[in-house]
Image (cartoon, rainbow, N blue to C red; front, side, top):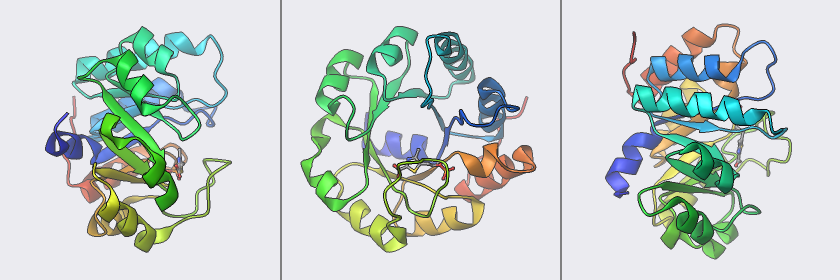
Length: 215
Ligand code: 3NM
């Protein structure tokens, strides 16, 4: 995928939250997409076999909405449900393998927290990097120390592919991430754990300069 195309898709990147019992994942995605999210990632760290149907439902909804859908970590699952791409961590499948399994048009993303990780990642097979945590986050239990806006800028400047910032981002500091070179912002809890998720999603869309899909 061309860098300009992927930059547009990264702008408001919503990632599902498997930690809020009273807010089903499909409802989270409906809200984010309706508010203008430009890409969706399914992330579920306590993955059971029963998640397959949920992933399929989210994938179907995203396809009907015309929003690219990416699965976190699991290349086989991404391929099985017909996702548009996969996002892998440093300890997951190699980007080269993900590319081989998913095919050339698929979106391949990889997590990069540090300059050392950036240097050892085979970015020739990636469309984008997710870099973070930009700010402190309580959502990812094994997150590295936050690298802040200066760290974000350093990684953006060295990355040959567009970067989406992640970790502790909400409508206010999203603007700072864009100012420091991020093509987009990836968010979970600022929407899913907000007292008013609809208002939070609308505020994120405004910060990202995207319009609601409505309907
Ligand atoms: N990855 P929130 S931080 C999934 O640093 C994830 O790679 C991170 O959630 C990384 O928007 C993170 O709630 C959690 O802070 C993002």
